[in-house]
Image (cartoon, rainbow, N blue to C red):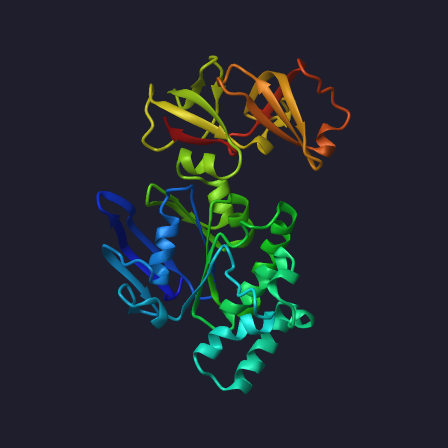
Length: 354
């Protein structure tokens, strides 16, 4: 990565005896779409508030364009924050809502009008410029709030759960819309979300936070395919976990079967481990896969594009989940109680310390 736009160096935030953010180090590039992902209480919102200037780090530095902004007030930072509630003025038209921040800066009216017209065209709402917020759909209000933040041309735009108020179908469409607008503007976006799918779809890179600390940071593919901890593996997508013990270069499962997988370099015979495999990496039949399991179908769920199976096996106390595409499931006898054999590769197996 070239010189980062935003750099966090050992940033910590304490509220009394509670450490909400714990020594976070991050570099975020210019024009990057970056996601802070975590469950409630992970520290992601506190971190966002420090970037916006609403909180001051207890220790550490926040640098933007090489300048320490840790103690700079929000109104003196080239940073805008888009709230989850959108906070549009109900008595103002779409155009006036967007122009409001520029009017507060006392820019010439001709420049304000030109910038508002330009951004209305980019968000494809030019024909709705005269409407009030209550005359817009949820997705349209979201775009107006985004336009109001972008029209001031910040170096950095912060988005706090920006799609949380939308229904599932609209949220999916707006994920792609946000990415399109970010590409078009070339502004660095940092989005805070607890929605793993949202982070994977929109972001160039994702940082997973837990208990105020940075657990893992990487591209969506790296985070999904190569989680560095059991928590990360469980938090992103679905994962099957199988307790096992290291035995002669392989893993011995709880039912006595062997699981072939790449072991950590420091693994020794007798060490307790957890083998993990994604549901979509399990395939019907033994085939030529290094690993296999035998189970009994106890439940299934149809999702349209795929079929999710729940299998009772000796590998884990929890059911093993299998995700089959519609074509894989076609023609198979998949009734409750059916005995099923599955195979998967060593390459698709992740191993974590128990």
